[in-house]
Length: 457
Image 1 (tube, rainbow, N blue to C red):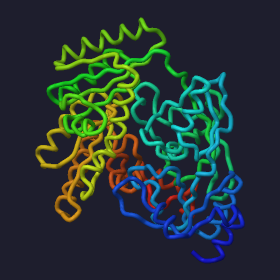
Image 2 (cartoon, one colour):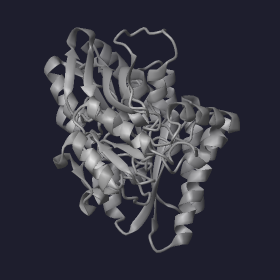
Image 3 (cartoon, helix red, strand yellow):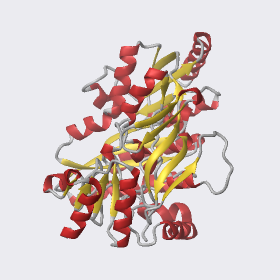
Image 4 (cartoon, rainbow, N blue to C red):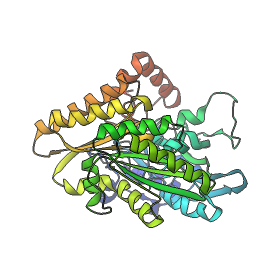
């Protein structure tokens, strides 16, 4: 990057908060996905919205690509700076602005990590429900519309954002939405920004909906003879009117990997569930019904009411599954499947994907946030085998095509990023994608914001 640009960045944020060192460029050129690294030219750490505005205004005037960076935990190359340029690391914008305790809301800067935020919110008896597993930044969660284990009860990020502060390509700062739960005034700019992966604007601040920490909860572990029966049970549990806070499916391979570090479960297809309730009586009633459903559908083991320590170990194991898999296959490349379908079609998708593993002889594991119809696989191939790597792409193509045929989506929560762009026309049609291009043109006519993501422009 030329000296004048570096000098301009230093003038805005101070020399200590600008770096073009190779170590920092390497660190900010790769997220947690398997997509190839691309180095930015410079990394800048702003502290205020005014600084972000000044940086964006300079980048737009000089047509320099600019990519936001939170924790770098994205899984589809969402934060990889494909065109180099400036990476804005929001690590210094990591404060809670205000807890609106009586309204169950919080206003927070984009660089705040969500687990750290929940530690602070616990002092008020509140928590932010969307749980992607990794300690993602709030800005990153908003950019990707992150969800996770608790989506089935509390919704995804999009369902829990009330308003945003956003820097547009011109450098103008706008506020979308408000703190009222009911909003009908004009176009819904808030939800247009959520999930746009930093391609329309940069979020600097957000007002989020919170939940009271549940007084009563219970974790459930149910084992089944086949993945297909476990998936049928998911539909039965949701269809019965039960309201789980989390409902995860794990095939036998996933359980085997979890047992390497955290758990001691039978290595068979398993459902992990958690229920929250206001009273112990209502919780017991739910537990009785879910046990009846599981046994009626052939559960071989059912355990309810595990203690807090064991409950935490179960969820730690589930959240660590990806990390465990990567450690088992250190010399392999991987591909993560992320699809979602209507809950009535989840058993069909799970059965199809489980059979595909066998038909294609692919190594990996099947798991997912089954309660909201989301399914993941992580598949592996040797780094020195292009043929096996191509097989992973074909596997993913088949799963995505089947999910869309089942009225679902190519990406339930990881975002489009780099890897899912090729499916956008298949899912939305040429007209839908063209409408997205027009929106991009309106918000970012010079294509400076995270170019190369979501759609070709």
